[in-house]
Image (tube, rainbow, N blue to C red; front, side, top):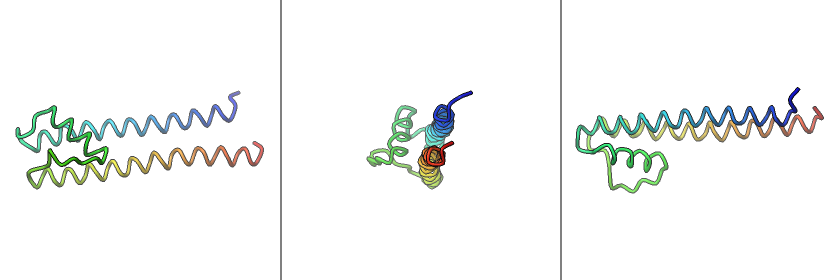
Length: 107
């Protein structure tokens, strides 16, 4: 039988993998969505760059959406990454709290 610590570590790793899968999915949607919505005004490399700068909340402002559709899309991408980040923090805190409670109760 696995020790409780190993079980909690496995749970934490699974939750982090879910976050990473979600993050990569949002990133790829951001890259190709922005590239498509900018209709040839931004090449694919700059679209990758824009997505990373936007998702990382750096926001240099050198590449910006130029039409309403791309602006609305950007709002959705930013909201998605905020929720994903909140999910990651909640997932980690939940696992840590559950482990601490289990240790305190002696199980």
